[in-house]
Structures are given as C-alpha cells and as structure tokens.
Image 1 (cartoon, rainbow, N blue to C red):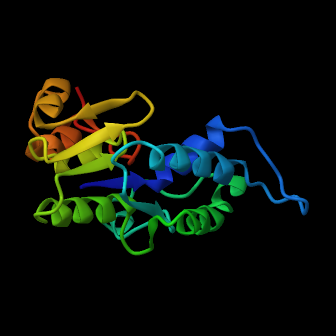
Image 2 (tube, rainbow, N blue to C red):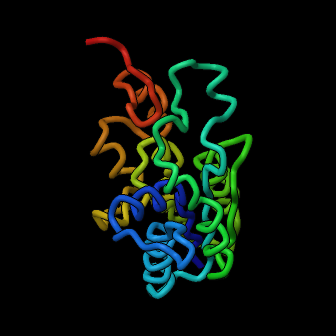
Amino acid sequence: MKVHLIDGTFELFRAYYGAPPSETADGFEVGAVRGLARSLLALLGEPGVTHVAIAFDHVIESFRNDLFPGYKTGDGIDPKLYAQFGPAEDACRALGIVTWPMIEFECDDALATAAARFAEERDVEQVVICSPDKDLTQCVRGTRVVCLDRIRRTTLDEDGVHAKFGVGPASIPDWLALVGDSADGFPGVPR
C-alpha cells in the first residue's frame, strides 16, 4: 500500500486563489473549501490511493516565531481564507481523510513525522508527500518516500531532489539556510 500525506494548508491556499468564490446562503465564503474538496475527491479517485492523511496549520504561528523574529506569520492572510480553515478540516474528515489540525507545531512537522514513521512500516510500499514545499524534500528517502507536486504532476525521489537542488535530501535544511526561503521568511546569506 501507499500512504499519501497532504499539505492541507498549501491545498487550501491553492483552492482559495484558484477556485471561484462561493458563498453559503448566510454569506459565508466557502469557495476554497469546495475547491479543496474537489481536489481531494480527484486524488481519492486515483488508482492506489487508499490511505490518506492531511495536515493543516490550524494556527499559523509556531514556536519557530520565538526562535526567529522574521519567521512567517498569519499577517496579511485574507480573513475570508482564514475563516475557511475549520470548515476545510471538517470537509476532510467527512471525506474519511485522517486530519491533523496543527496548533503548537506546523503542518510540515506532522507530514515529516508521519513520513518517517510510515516509511518504517513493512506493509507500506511508498510514502507520497503531496506538496511542492521545498522544506519537505528533506524527508525524501530513495524511492520509498517521495514528494509529489500535484499541480505540475511531478514526483521527486532522492535522485530527483539531487538533480533539482544540487544536494541530497539531508542537505536541504542547509541549502535553504544559504539560499533563503521567502515562504518561511528566511532571507538566506547575502550574495
């Protein structure tokens, strides 16, 4: 069996900015939730997708904000998007997807932990981390743990990580520290 681990925060942002807006009868915006549900139903309909979990940054800030003042925050998130996190988690549960709303840690932490644990299970043929997030490529192990960019329909195994970034998965944290990561608020080393 394959285990699919989904970056719910990314998927919800993607749906919010990519799907048409839609309001309930009482005026509550649910377009991102609908877009997310459609995307997840498409994934669940693919052959071999049987064991799925999704994680959300239920609270955007984490302990990392205390460690680095420039780390990402929830500032600037459209309130109509932020209000859809709870309903998105509910929709995922209704689809039968194991849902992890992260509060003290981040979505990436849940996905990385699950990837490491499931990769050790004998019955698990492959762990597929569904996210284009560069941070998560540090979790890749051979062809057993891979990252799937569902938008571009590309999969990165260990050779793919090395080809794309010029370093292996274990060196991704150092690589990101050097080049920076605007998504997380890291400036990198100048020049």
